Image 1 (tube, rainbow, N blue to C red):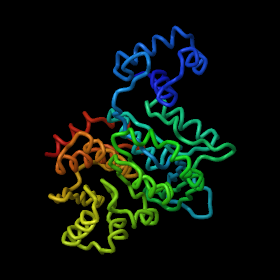
Image 2: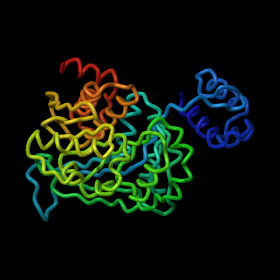
Image 3: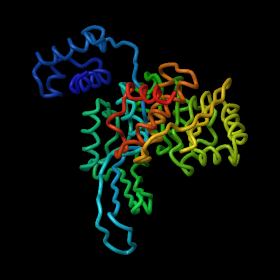
Image 4: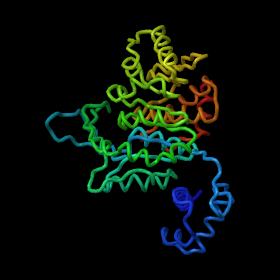
Length: 361
């Protein structure tokens, strides 16, 4: 679909009673142009007839963080308390947004729900989402507010030296607002959440929707939000430290990994993926446990690897891959991410992922 077709379809889904005249006024186009767009949507199977009857939904809802990442690194050894010549980069980030973009690049339809300020960064994220084909119209915009920002400084080896996370805006994403999007969420194939959103919203989502819910735990501190509802998630992705925090099990060896994976499965989780960084991935279901090493690659930037990995998990679930193929697919997606200077690789695609899987058989 074109960007305009997606805009019109999204508006019709929210207001099925809307007329073509109203659509023309809303999007500042002629009525005949609206007719062409509607005709195209019917041909593409997005609308079944002119009375706006919709086929079964095939999109993924992602609810989570979106922010601007501002990073700097010096040309030479980093000097404290001094001005360091170097480079500064500005990019779009946030775990939820990154997962959503990776899924978009894999060809999936996305409904992304987040909270943004009405500043230049918020507007830029919206514009970028349109270019990607990601629907962000159901997100909340707060007037006179600054979009969440992550400011970080790397040392001369590009390792994190210090960072400031200004994410208070996430508190403005209220339970009442999420309740107003209940129909959007319930009609999706799967709902992916990150723990940037409040514990109250996480509890509501796992208790009020019959669709599968997947969670990315983001950090050890934020992971604690799901301690009491672990078993209500269909899919959980954690790193080693997050897994230790949630399970109470110290992971020293593969025996501990097995015990930890079993903890999540016995709680009721259908699929658990424990990321081990350079050591690979430990994944499990009720009937199977798999340990996979990372693929050999030239590591350029590890920032977006976990988000690409999570997107690979979700894509694999929707395609009904078995645990082994799901794990390999997700690792391949993460491999593409670490080979890119950017948080989200512009080379991310199912074709590229399959190529990497083939090369690492």
